[in-house]
Length: 348
Image (tube, rainbow, N blue to C red):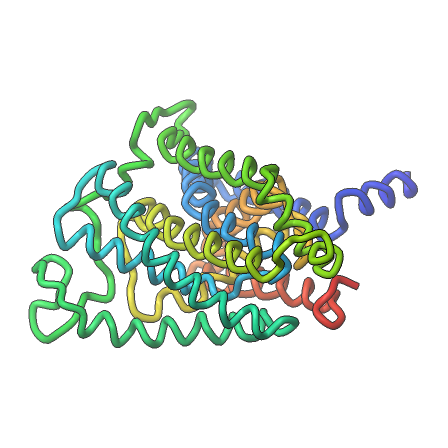
């Protein structure tokens, strides 16, 4: 029995087994504390769906050897800018969501290209530099949200200058993807439209990973010198990967915002890279290896754990709200675990 558990731990990973055991304990506690199961499962599905594309943004960078993209807020800010443009011109419904995605792509390409020029000059220090870039972009856009020429009365402050901190989407596309083709089974709401969209993005990234360009990118990340000797332009692969990651970040925040029903500006994107990174690490990814399976599994585990842990913690300690504490401890703890296994930027 001990040998079987040891082999299972090696193949599946002891951290994931521990997290699965903790998730199982939370599910058990949900029944013991009489927490509404259908409602909680519905929240799990929505949280998984709206966070999955942000987690997918980790794939290109890891493939190309630039590591975890702590500069994800760069793409998120591009998506938020596109979202504000869609609200400014009253783009509504499913069409408004896809219009916002389309608007975000040129901004993300430009920002991703500019950022990639820096990434190619700081090889070996990407994670430190990307964290600085992500935080700096959020600070810069705090100024931008105050001075950009938006005029729609529903998104600007009624008194003073600038955009509101939180902008609800009831007038435009609040949960439009969640409700598209949605149905209920045993009290659980199935967001079919959201599942179809994120499934489409997963398929696109999966096909890209197996394309000629994707294989060259993977070779550049796995062994740059060998790839370079075989005619692969390593810096170009890193540039393309950074742009793709930024584009996915911009699209991901639009899906995220419509799923929750509001955009949050100013300092809200500051820490949004950490849940995405924590999710892929939970799924079994490393700073040098990742697959779509890692992204999907990790997002399911991480977001389900947070969705269930919040009502469980609030039921156990009703006088305080522990949801943010739980999220911070789990996400940062997993990232610290992964970084502790690295030596000189490589997996030990």
